[in-house]
Amino acid sequence: MGRVIAIANQKGGVGKTTTAVNLAASMAATRRKVLLIDLDPQGNATMGSGVDKYDVENTAYELLVEQKPLQDVVVTDTNGKYHLVAANGDVTAADVKLMEEFAREQRLANALKPVLDHYDFVFIDCPPSLSMLTVNAMAAADSILVPMQCEYYALEGLTALMDTIERLAEAVNPRLQIEGILRTMYDPRNRLANDVSEQLKAHFGDKVYRTVIPRNVRLAEAPSFGAPAMYYDKSSTGAKAYLSLAGELIRRAEQQKKADAAAEA
Image (cartoon, rainbow, N blue to C red; front, side, top):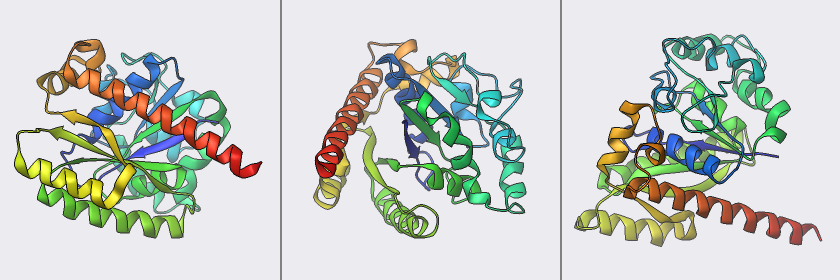
């Protein structure tokens, strides 16, 4: 059964969508079956996957509001070699429409249940706000990957996000946990970045990924070409970093499986 990971941070501009697209592509490159769900009405993950958000027939709106089966909504031909549930401005209306619906926070979880056996990993790109779309992502996810810059305000935002995750775990999804914290746009020459990085490791321990995503021009350029960095410039430090992150996630997932098996024995 596929592992569902929401990629979330209430603070914008931290590399959330960059992480969603490039991690999905890196996982697909390891021959895993991957689904990326774009829940951000800006549709940046959709465009970064090489799919025109203005021309797509079905989006997360049809999945969540009209409750179309996922297989009727998914885009199977992307530049990242993964499957995609697209998003565009229509998804803004989904946020409003869902407020009127019964069991509204479980729509995404229910849509994923029939297809989870078809995927190894499902990544959800969340909007940078606590909306009904984000609540749906949290209700459907096994865990949350938190991308963050190593700066002072990011630490404050992380505290708020942890509080939100704790409340949502109590309300809609008791199994929800932190998958890991990813340091993005990292510049080792910056003293503050190093200080914040050390604080993160001291407070969260092995929840902080060893992999660090550097500031990288190729990562910034790739979306305008509608491709993940590994297909835009596979030799770039950004592309290599996300491949390394994929390897780290795979190792952690395998270790967790062994630990679960040992606990059941």
